[in-house]
Length: 79
Image 1: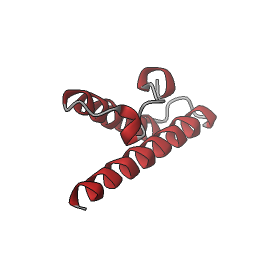
Image 2 (image 1 turned 90 degrees about the vertical axis):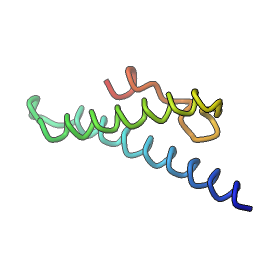
Image 3 (image 1 turned 30 degrees about the vertical axis):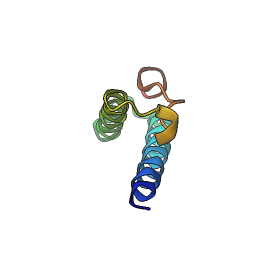
Image 4 (image 1 turned 60 degrees about the vertical axis):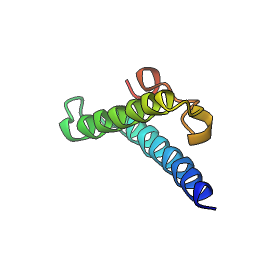
């Protein structure tokens, strides 16, 4: 039971972070002000968190689909 708890936690966390990151990227694209440091900083933080989660999952031999991060490419989707 304990392992399931961690699995579902990581799965939810990955999906939520991905959703918030994609929303932040969309919001920044739709902003009329090109020089929006706050939103650029938010997006940069999500970029770093997602790349870190993906790297760590790889290091621990965890399939990215198990944590909901298999279909996001930070360079493509958040860049």
